[in-house]
Image (cartoon, rainbow, N blue to C red; front, side):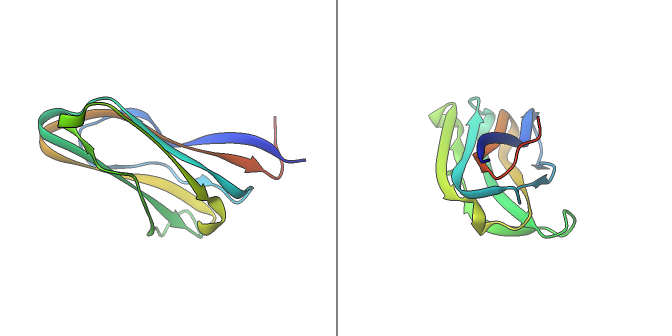
Length: 122
């Protein structure tokens, strides 16, 4: 049975320095799904946040997947971005890599993945 499910690939947190989320096994997610970025308005001076998705075969050696969200810019305020993607394009494990810019940046952010799972453990 296939069921819709989601996972945090960057847990909700205050980001003041570059950070990587923990690897999430996405091999049970098949087909298309969503990657979502939800942030507060960045604070600091000219604060920015760039978030890209990295993937790995072994949850140890990471490479950029080629997927990135639009840059979050302080002048634009809070951001919610939801992208429809083929989850099959990624290797077994994925994580979010967040990079902050500006002077004394601070932003609350989370990244989630949602899609169809081929099995589900309650």
